[in-house]
Length: 199
Image (cartoon, rainbow, N blue to C red):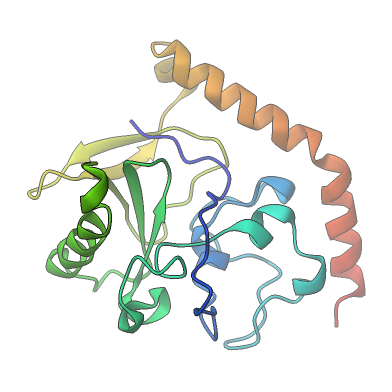
């Protein structure tokens, strides 16, 4: 089991910009307004329009950097073009959110090997967790996984509270993140006010 929490922060490459890519606006869970992962953000405008609250977006969105933006993947594999968003969840755990069902296992493996090569000098071995397209997950939820033919973990569903009770460290983490979400309710009200004022 791996833990999807709020958006993970790594340092962006100084030469890369998101451009028209808004993939993380769907794949990323947003702590500040309890947006589940793999659900299009309600603040995402029409194709190419980007975020409708960009100047007022939450801190987790401002700080988020995917592996491509960090420069760990070649330029040609920007998430919207590659069909997958890779992000570092920890120093050794990579999360891959598939944007489309037609992203092949070969493409995922090819890109994962690029990421593995990018950390080669550190001696770290990366683990990959793949989340299928459209599989929504509440912020802080723990996902149940199964291994695929390549030996990577594939998310299958959210763990139930009963299942979490068997793993006290995961249950504690889940409860901590959900408490943070509850603590953001004032911000949620502010974002709702922005929605009313958005064109």
